[in-house]
Image 1 (cartoon, rainbow, N blue to C red):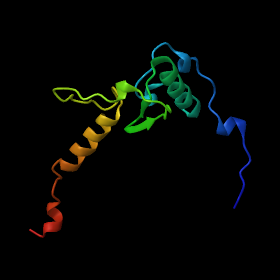
Image 2: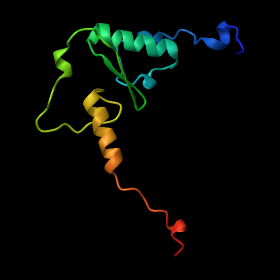
Image 3: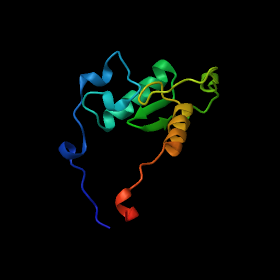
Image 4: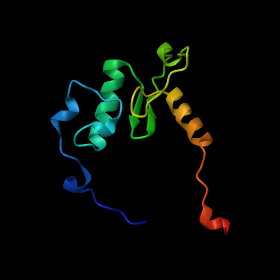
Length: 115
């Protein structure tokens, strides 16, 4: 294969003071100057400062393995919580969105019907 040489200007994002802001979003894409640095900084800070191991990146859930039991991660709420994409990331929300995406009625393509 071909080896690509590392170019600092092309392959890195400049530091942005917003990465160290007091507010840590649940969705990393809301950070100003989103890039690898912002992603790693927010994930690290959310785990170390808030002891939260779930972080959204758009509609993708990133989970940090804490190598310990975190009892707050095992929560069953009564009645079931209505989850919102981009807020309160957890494995239950991911299951919720996957389930509802599967059972949502799909529009029929009438052009293929031949009528």
